[in-house]
Image 1 (cartoon, rainbow, N blue to C red):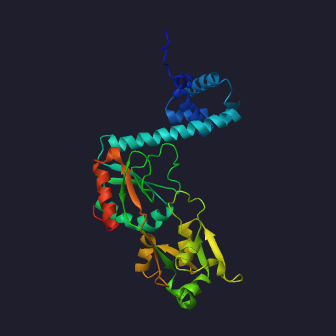
Image 2: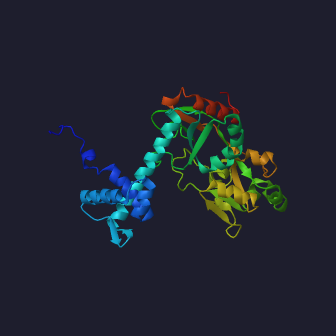
Image 3: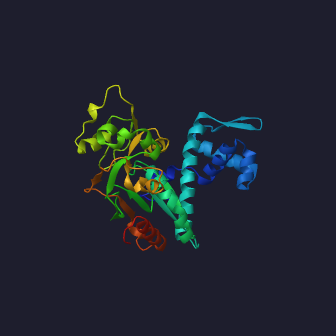
Length: 322
């Protein structure tokens, strides 16, 4: 039989997927017997498939001592790669069954920042699930929207990037409004933070830019105070500490723990202000009118009914027309 001239060499070099499946099961349990039970085949079939795989690779994958087996160094390397590939295939298969199969339930994958998921989304989800019990959400959080793991293809991004990637349609949301926040108790104990100079010289909890290279602009205390004509470099050298972290959720938890003052992004902290847990010690704020947040959805799913319902719900929650 002649091979086609355009044969895919990668596929030709691939070992049998049945053999790889048997290997992964045996490696997980470190037992050919357990692997056979898991896959509903005989132990002899497992041994035969693994022997075929070892012959294909030209090396042993298991060290056999009586009934016990353990992975060789080559086996450990192959197991890590094979298991990750199988997990990705299983996740995509599940997604396709839910999105395109004959089922009444739908799943949407949403990608946003950790802070947005905790401070904006989490407390609103019960309303969404109550109104749309037939839609499941798969939430992926990241600070690096351009470098997601293989196999992750969000239906929706919530991001500050107007063009997240090819194949997505962006809907503009809100501008950033940024102002200082603290607890009522902290303000009572530190009345000096009721003016900008006193606040500058107090305990400041700062959002650092580390790991946030994809944010269009970064506003920290130095930038925010400079906009209001104050130099953060003039803080007292021996004054209170200036704490830096690139985890905004952590900073808000520290503020709630009365450990200092942080900058609050209105869309994230407004619910805490409405609840009386946070206050604005000064009235000054910064509004970034040149940039917005965006909801971006997959263009190929523009007509998807479940995605349309989530988009309408989200825009209503954000106080925007659908």
